[in-house]
Image 1: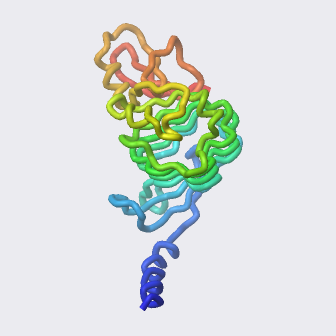
Image 2 (image 1 turned 90 degrees about the vertical axis):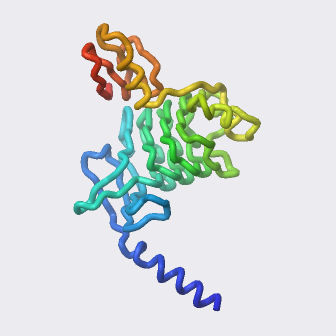
Length: 241
């Protein structure tokens, strides 16, 4: 009986495994994916895993919400283990669709200073940000802290220099007695990109103003991604190298 049950599980998984396709998306910041017909996640028809990236990526790297192959749209749901290991970029923007980040996904990214994670993240793997010695700003929009490996995703000595930003209504869930989430240097409210855009539209139209990913006003655009409110009230995003 158990043998038949095991065989039925294998038969169920075969279509997904057989349909996996290697995908290289030119022009998507040098990021490489594996796409699957189907998904483990509810509400996702087809999914893509981030498998690798060019080591010489610099500045702000933005993982897209979806990738397209042969007319089929795949939602990016997973950053696989070692995917960005030893990359050179300084900021990473992870979209809402990503649910899991694997072991050592960003291991050795020595220039990484800022991480922006969308609202649906559920799991962060062992040593995910190990060796990210410059990391000082960690923004996460998830309503509840995602599960983490019992082995630290971020070294304790690195957490001691990081300010964690989360929406004010859930900030208390992060600023707690949790052995991982409760041990960052500081905790602060976050204004995510859509909210920042809404807030800036309500301000007087006096000159153009620059904001970072957390919605904080800057004296001038900084290296990486910036939100610019122009004199006419319109909003655009720019990346300054």
